[in-house]
Amino acid sequence: MTSAPFYPSGVQDSRAQDPRLARAVPELLAESQRVERWPEFRADLERIRFSPYFSRLSAVTQVISQTGAGLAVHNRLTHSLKVAAVARAIAVALSAAEGHTKRTLESLGGCHPVVVQAASCAHDVGHPPFGHLGEQTLDRLAREHFGLSEGFEGNAQSFRIMARLDQHNRHDAGLNLTAAVRSAIVKYPWVRADGLGERPGTETERGLAPPVGGGGAKKFSAYAVDLHNMLQARGAYPRIGQRQQTVECSVMDVADDIAYSLHDLDDFYRAGLLNQTAISAEFRTWHAERRQLAEMDQATLVRTERAPGRSLELLWRRLYAKDAWIADQDAFTQAVDRVSEDVVEGLLRVPFDGSRQAERSLATFTATWIGHLQNSVEVHAAPHVRSGHVNLNQAAWHEVAVLKFLHERFILDRSDLTVYQRGQAKLLERLVLGFSAWLDDAHDVRRAPRRLLDLVTLATEDMLRLHQDSPELLGAADEPALLRQAKGRGIIDYIASLTDAQATSLDALLAGTSERLWDAGQGL
Image (cartoon, rainbow, N blue to C red; front, side, top):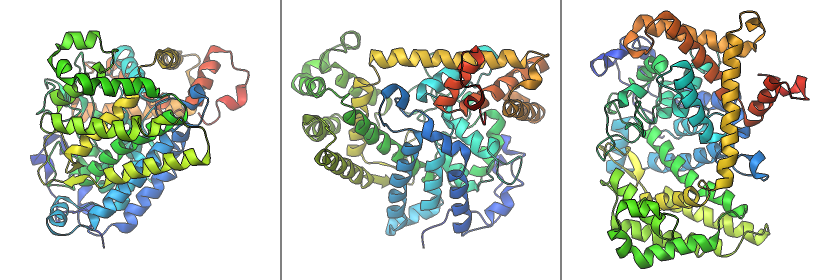
């Protein structure tokens, strides 16, 4: 029998940890007195898998949209399913552990494979159309057009969907998931405002430091209107630090890194987008000139980063600046050597030609690396603030960073992709501004999409309740500003729930250029 998450025998009054939990405690009693939760966790997993928000991920961009690429690439659904598979394998292995590892896991709440699967399936449901480009665009528009200081964040949107927007058997509880699964979704257990005043550095939690320009935490997992729900769920884990992931969440987070680092590499190799000559030159030059590169000043490196070897040197410096607690020059060099041997001079040496032999080679490569990384996890009772209770060991941590570097440097920086993404950003901006103008039209607002109106009403209820209970969490100074922000949150909730194709179709409909009037907007 695997260990079930720990639940205290009585109510843990978490208000001592955070006064904002004052109204979140009552639901905790029934949840906290249960110990064995197999049926409930399985029900959570199936509710997520049957959710329309989960289904839509099959038509949401992971890195490059299928429409733009003209080929079969990973989407958010296939990515989520593979994260779930990797995470479950890790959780099963940890659940079978003995000795110190077993005692550590039990003291922290356990590591249930079904909870990990459920969290993995749910972790990306909040991502909007067009991948991270969509996330950045909606964040900017939420701030600039509606005055929402929290903007938009995919992780916070995922939690909002699971806990509030989606529907099962209670109108006010989303999918009515257990505290274990809701907590396992929370990768960044704070709101955006908690990052105000924080500074990037090795002692600041990963994601809590603000992005360039400030404005609060770069990553966070709950909007202020959903904070009470997040705190209520995490109240079932009194031994987890206030800013630390649960064990099951950290397993999901590690699996997400593993899947992202390898499955996107799979896509780009199949598509012939990874230029072996250019990548080989980058790795060979860095290795041959690393002493000279190490002595080069930062400004010169940045100015000449397109020259071979420079980008790898910049990667090392970024890793060390952010994570000196684990970053190590020798470990980084060994990771570069391993990726160079296995990927650059190995896999990429022979272009993918679609043959069965090529498929076998790619499958073997991927399975070998996933197995290696899955077996490289460690469990810590008191992890570094920038890490989780479950993390990759030092060698694997560097290897994943170098694997990610391949597509970040040689795919995401491509100008042809940038041109396409700028067009997608304009499309989302037209949608946001178009729906905003529609809701401001007193003569025609009644004919707006019913679901849009429902989401605006729901956001308004949430904002008014928060204004009454915890006004200090809101940026709105008066009722008109509050209602404008509520309208914005509802519009953002609506647009973020679209697929890539639905967003494109709606844009054409609002512009009056669509030739497919009746089927383009069905179910919107």
